[in-house]
Length: 224
Image (cartoon, rainbow, N blue to C red; front, side, top):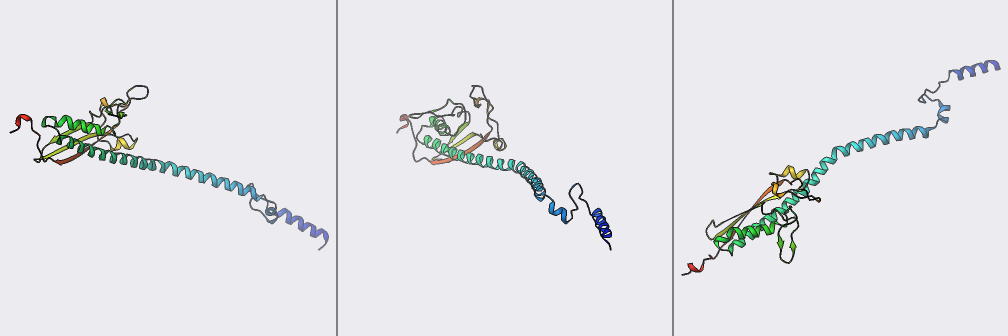
């Protein structure tokens, strides 16, 4: 084969070689050696990064409300448990006060003792009860409307004190879900501007304490 024949074969082969499409494929060996692979790798990495960011955002949107409710629920349950301990101690103080009071003084003395203890967990008006040597108890206003004390001597020679307290649930979202009654209008919480705000929902806590009574208080006229 002469030189002209060889030149014709080479020209035909070059003319028949595959050309890259718009997306860069297919590539022959020569084209692959000259192709900018870093550009394609960067574009592929950016696409995967965008997909990962979208997946993370979707997971956050789905899981955040559940996590938030779990956190608020734990806070509210701990607050309720603390209030139950205080209500039980208020019932004990009411019974202890009744032990050293006359029969006619049972109710007012026990009511006052229970309110004094419950003032520390009450959330109400700023002006409220005071403690000698301490001063005003913040937020203790309205504790009287939320406290009910019952004193009885059943069984005999025992003092039974039952305290029912409407505890304000201040945690958002979970508070209204756990409440069993709305707050009364006279126990609304004032705002910083002095206007009356929205009342907190409430949960009624009841505790009962029995204390033995080894003696009986009598008036001097009843002495033998």
